Image (cartoon, rainbow, N blue to C red; front, side, top):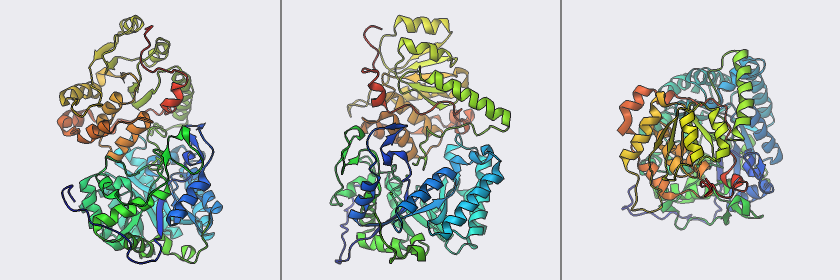
Length: 562
């Protein structure tokens, strides 16, 4: 539906209360307990989150499991909020490498998964097997071979245990459907593909297989997305938040439909959180009302019709007896990845032997020591490509340990003498390529400038390479986002990574630029470089939120003394 088309009005037409069901929420993520990147920023507001959802009319949640431990935490929430929270059990495709790394081996992990699913199904807490599937957009997290192997193994477990499926598919439709098709007929309730961002044709094939389609903010980002959602048969629709991610943003095509939507409590920065307030950038179940409202507007029906269709769907998990409408209501986790954050769970999926793993762990310990001395907002993009803020002199020793061949500076700051000597003594090629900040709609980054930077990154003879601006947030974030588009990342994931580094001050103009950037300009070079297969080493952790680091270094720009 284009911007010029009339926006239909969607309101409930009866006095019956609207009943929302959030079929995908990563409620075990630490941010819902006030912890961000290992730091307790505010008190846990989990009970408040659950109450807000209930106040807006949410009847049930399904808390998603992304690995064995996440599944256990999801089940604990189902135990803590009986009749209101339910859980899935499974291992996300981006975590498929965990099977081979598990103490006792893959068979041991599969057996523990089987036992957990059986027991939790019996006590009514687990209502689906997932999040399982294939993700070829993020092969740097888990390679294709283990994804295929353990998707198939988990499908067989789901058939054995007779749990419907909670599925994830990214850029893998052919293999996904090939493995899935023969097993669906063996399940009493087939399940759904959650957080759907695929094409109209892919959606139609999923529906033809008897699967429901899960829609959240990431499913409503572009005009093309909206057309796909409009075409989803109502009887095959499910709604979700996938919090703490996938909120509806002002830059999304769907945001224009939120006029008149139910009001949510005020959202503030996490450092300013107070009881009763939401947190900016942390999506939560109460926002399910906005997802339903947008869908109703797109389809030209009432919100009540959307919710009733979801609640009574033939294959809906919540139509099972243990989740019947008579179940007692009760007083609620990042996932990233999608239930896991992209930069927090990177690891080397190519580790094969015990010695490899031991060496990897030893390297990880050393890298943690090095990382403590690295610049603010330092991160590994892929093996051999790093990002950061403008380094201080005391960061240079740690940077030397990376064995850099190239540094790309995106700002026109004078290079301090200490840095000039560092570059010269270590034989580093230094490229200064000025990137304009996206602060003014009339000032744009020329494609030629961005392509020049990306060409340097795509040439492995320049690796290891560090790309930096002043704070390592906006200009560097745009470069990394365009690089991710060359890797074939899903657009929501690209923006999600940008926001994690740019928080708490992301720029809408940056997001617009990232959306507009056309990676096909470098198609041949990207294809010949094999960039889509480039992976992270997994040796570097996600940095603390920038504002936390700023407390230690009040000014992230190069200080005048340099």
